[in-house]
Length: 130
Image (tube, rainbow, N blue to C red; front, side):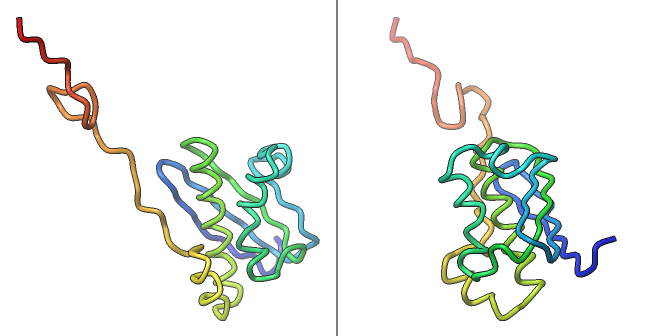
């Protein structure tokens, strides 16, 4: 077992990410693959690493993530929240810094349910006069 193991959960839309963070040399593994393989775009990788960059902890922790559900952007935000929560467990002094960049707020926006008698959540069936 790895010492100083920090476990936290992040969620966004229908995505969930379980983040395990422990001291190491900065390796990040998402669902058994490296960060670069799982998120090929540099902008996606930068978004995931944002909490570490803000707190200047990049390169000090190895991170293992199990992410499931939703799409790519939902998973990115779930992982980002999970990492931010793990950093707070590591050192509560970082709360103000992470709050400043809005990294500890769970985004509550979810898909609105479809209503009966309608085509979707807001869209109606087409009305015909004759």
